[in-house]
Amino acid sequence: MAETLYDRTAFHPSELEHTFGDRVHLLDDPLSLTFLARLCARETGQPEVGRLVRRLYEQLTWTVVSAEFPRAKVAVPTRMVATHPEAVYRGIAIDRAQKAVTVGIARAGTVPSQILYETLNEVLDPAGVRQDHLVMSRVTDADGRVTGTAFLGAKMGSDVDGRIVLIPDPMGATGSSMSDAIAHYKTKLRGKPSKIIAMHLIVTPEYLRRMTADHPDVSVYALRYDRGVSPVDAFNGKPGSSPKESGLDEHQYIVPGAGGLGEILNNAWI
Image (tube, rainbow, N blue to C red; front, side, top):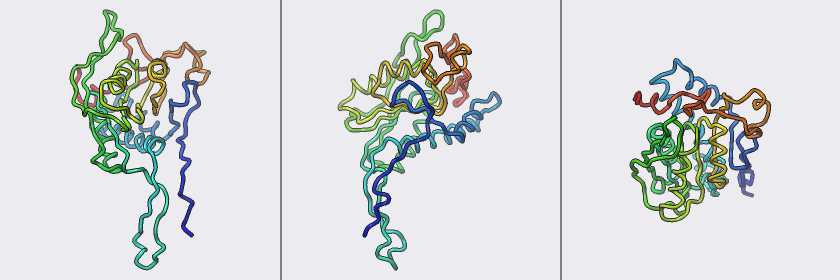
């Protein structure tokens, strides 16, 4: 009889409890939190910043692919088949036929998207993996508050039908840019994505409230939930349980956060 142990999988990443719904995944990963704390530290600069971002996004990619991508049954003869004809692994693997798009939003999302693109090319059929590029900028009012997003340029394919669209942006702050990028992929390109997944190192309460309101069908994965400027009583509940939770300062930077990660990654202080 053929082995049946690996005919199915019940993989679920470890997550924190929250009230934002089933499509929000606040991962409970001590090793990633360790590296993320180092990334955010005041004294950390290049080249360590680049190495840490790569390590964190490789781990996040493995988690998302394992949790979200379809499986296929495979039968793979091992090196032992020369002496044991029954030496064939029979079980599941990630379906190489699945098509995917990773979206690099300049500047902070450029490096994570490249990391994701390289990883997906190893897991899937590379012919079905595409990387798109968006240049977007916050639009602010006279008080410095974000009021919208300006599209400054794009290089992207024309269709997304049946593809999994992944948008790796390290800091989920206000949700303005991400919401507009997702709306673009839903309405401006040919076909319908099978899934859209946002992938972050850090998110705020404001970001998750915006995303779950604008795009309740989109899955969000994050390594850390920052609500550092909340009132004291808001820290006692589950993430999302208090409307007073806040992770943004008056300039809409994340607290405790990581500072301007796009600037730090590129040593471009503009």
